[in-house]
Length: 401
Image (cartoon, rainbow, N blue to C red; front, side, top):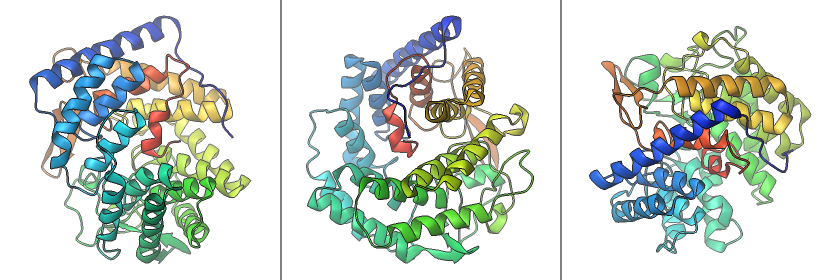
């Protein structure tokens, strides 16, 4: 399924420029940590910077980011992988940091016990799927196994029959950016990886592949795949899938992105197909990724550089598909999106010239973002992966691997 070594796709002048940008971002983030009381989270702050520093092998930046994350993570009670204490602990454990993390597994289990399947958040960023991602590497331990069992129980209880399959209702904060209006009180039947059925599918694919046993895993995974496939649109100029299957976002094309769009859908189907040994689902994944790779840049909806829904995220996922398939179409697409990532850099604003376009129903504004999802740390990780043979295993926290 996956090749033994990572193949970097940038060489020569482009690789040198990417390395220079990564170094500039690292220096800017070090200054940020010295002068700011940072958000500790993975998505927005110090934990995301620590993840970058660990992969860059920069111990000074790593130590500063770890200190900042530890000082503030107790103030993050959210049951959230990307915005709460579990994400801080995930990164510190991944990096082998000397930190007091022994109680976090039990705390995550308690967070899951407190979630009401009727009203609780399901998604990867702030909910059940993200907490399960945290626990998956510890599935062999009693506490980790109990937490994973609880997570899948919640997914089973929250599942809604829809389009011949199974869906889950989401209240995604960033849909306002996409649809330009306030969310509906009942939320949406989401499709994408970050906040939709593809997040459930990708998680359950990893659970199934790991050998962890739960009686509902396969049923929920195949139900999610059926729902996703039923929502594919006939016109793929802007997107193969809409943002959501109902409500105000129904039928609206998602950006070509990891979070809500075709790239995340393709990743989820790739993992599900391999977990189930289903060649049709694998072929669907490659077809969706191919369509996205050949889409005109102006039709993608991409307007900034972050991993979540920007140029760096597109480049990285196309590079992953090239790694998995050795298809030259994906290598070309990845290089084009790396070039756009480098070209989006400004000089007068942002973190080392990068800012995120943040929107709401009342307008949009450029904001400095240091963290993993929309910020400079994620951009630097993607560019680093373009120039090194180190497998970018950091993308496990995004369910990309």
